[in-house]
Amino acid sequence: MERRRLTRKVKVGNVEIGGGAPISVQSMTTTDTRDVEATLVQIYGLAAEGCEIVRVAVPDEEAARALPEIKARSPVPIVADIHFDYRLALRAIEAGVDKLRINPGNIGGPDRVRAVAQAAKERGIPIRVGANVGSLSKAILRRFGAPCAEALVESALEQVRILEDLDFYDIVISVKSSEVPMAIEAYQMISERCNYPLHVGITEAGTAWAGSIKSSVGIGAILAKGIGDTIRVSLAADPLEEVRVGYEILKSLGLRTRGVQLIACPSCGRAEVDILRIASEVEQRLKQIQAPIKVAVMGCAVNGPGEARMADLGIACGRGKGLIFRNGEIIASLPEDQLVDALMEHVEALVRAREGEKLARLS
Image 1 (tube, rainbow, N blue to C red):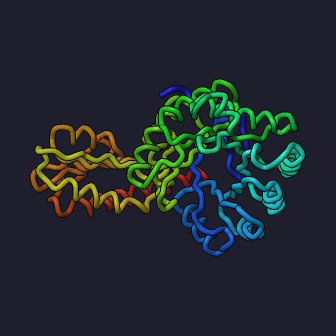
Image 2: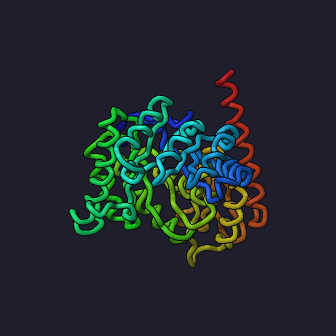
Image 3: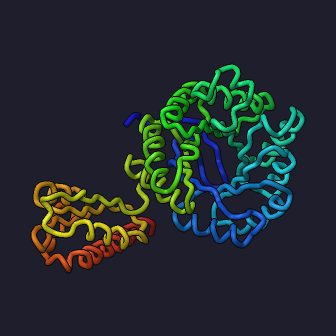
């Protein structure tokens, strides 16, 4: 894991991006933004799952008119996704959104871009310049011949230069591709050419299953290079899944600690208990716990005790029974049918103890 690169700091509402701030997790609503109540229900669900910034589509005036109420009632910062009509960007700024996602090249001439940049600067609203393979201009494609990492980077930097010429520097950049190697190369290149914070993602990754794998490989590889300040997992699925996968990626790299990190045995012919059932049940019962703890569920005596000892809490199973470890020490030996309930009791006790310690430090 390479050392994380330090970038400029941008504030999106009360969330910092870049400047060494924790890598934030974003998502985007799938509701019709004009339906305020449905959109807010989804935003609250995303926030409860840990989403820290939510983007909403603003395709027309009616959607723009819904923004003030959405913004006023949202528990997290709101990003307005704008394309083609600069007036919608101005309406979003007036509504008090926390950030704009625009492509300066598709909202009109210099006067229109200047109007948006000036209004955003006056309100302290950052702008994300998003380049992806589906939005490359004809000029860029003629220049490079086909979509490629260099084309993505040059497209993004062209748009950035438009804003910089207007004395606007509160910028976040993304260079997304649905091709993982291209995305990795593009983020590597742009990180070497500027110090703006980077929004990392694999665009159009796919359905929940395939897209999660593709996003984990791509986003994980980029983050492992020390590149990236905020992420969005783009799935053709419930956006709650985007947030869950995002946190799993960050946890796997040791970059965020929200929620439980579950280590589970893959199972094999050595297992003498139904480890697949036990691991699945533990995973389901741990979903609502947000404390940053590590739990291991291991199925045999070969690796089980060692892995279980390295977790905050762990099970190492044998024939019809298992041991429960806490911080490397055996605390119980129980029949298989009692293991999960006992493990959950110890998890809840550990969570309560840590919450008590946290309150004691604050008092």
